[in-house]
Image 1 (spheres, rainbow, N blue to C red):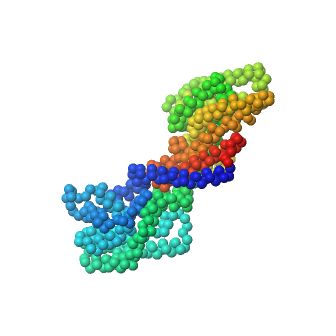
Image 2: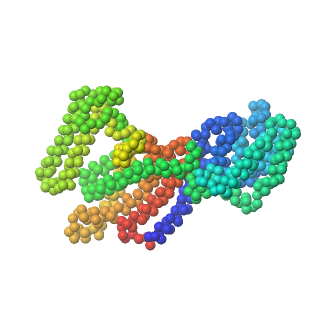
Image 3: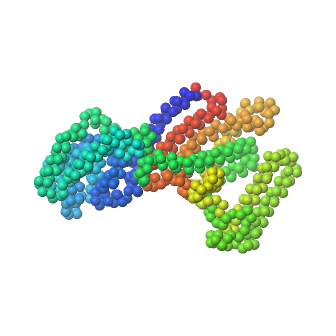
Length: 571
């Protein structure tokens, strides 16, 4: 098995690469730009005044100034740069008639193109600033030189601690950038001022000419490595998911911070699904085609057909909004009466309590008749079940009566993962507070999976019950429960173990809809917010972690096959 696991782990590497490529393509080829919603003010400034410094830094931080997959910017020629600069100058600096002025969209596109080309067009800008006949073109080219010639700091946007050698290099780079940023002159300056600035640029170009001369190996490296995808994968290898463009915090730290909410919610719902669905599937298989089996099938598929958002809002309205719940219905307090559109009479409230008590007494009478008529019902376990059902029926019928009377009843909190004062609670009080907050979200995440898992468990067990190797177990005189639970169930679990690989990614995403409805600050809500605000790195981080969990979930399903069925081997 160890060899099989190692092979599967190695196979995950190219699979994960392809998954990351698909996610990367979807995000980068989608309409709009990452961070667009969160950078509206920057874009407005860009459209009216040219490319702002803040948005330039934003693009560099998220590598949005680089090509997606292939970088051929080292081959840009002098004519293209001159055309771009002339278009910008005609739009921003010249007083031209409207029919001759370049459109705003073209000017913005040209401005971003010049910005994104960065160091690759420094020699072309220098030649324009030195030799062009148009003084406006020379002025703009000189101004752009002070920006495009700047070097980027090493690991400028990384959250990791930099070693002293890197800090020393960054200090030297920053001093050089500060110096060349001053090598510009005001528009309309005299020839002597322009000549003094260009002399400085000429000496600087002679000293650093090697930066802008690319050998064949340099071009090959730039072609494939100086791109968004290459930079992103270089960060992934270091387990660096980048930083969020909303608050500049590392994405991995934010994911880990929100992971506990989604793990608690989703992992708990998965456990509940299997704890409830597997016994239901076994019961349906044993009672195949009985009235109980048909009724259970109808109920489960009715639940499965209900949309999660509808059930979530309905439970929130009925069980979280209204007067406080009481075991025996009573009139709401004056403060609670403001929540009601119509106030029932005292007699109606008392009648609701009597109806709940009458329904409970009916079940008590039915249970007493079963106990007296069937000695098998008098075991301690069955008595405990009967008593529990009596309590549940009374509580449920009392809650139903209050919902009918008041339109809703306050049993569970309206949302959040815990109370505001949770820090002041003891450990047990805190756990109980979390459990109360998660009851309704757990119900919403659980009921839909019951039908699927229970039907898989039923079909898997039906195939096994009638298998040849089960007949000798019955022939030996073993009781039916022993035959089912000991010999049949293990082999019938393979279909539902297959679904475990698909359920595991919910540990990351949880349910986006449920986390939004109940305001749970997990990864589902985080993913929705990141998509809305085009938080590029955050969306990539959540989707990649979800993809990795899917791969590990499939591996876990395969391994569990051998644990359940000894006949399965991975040799």
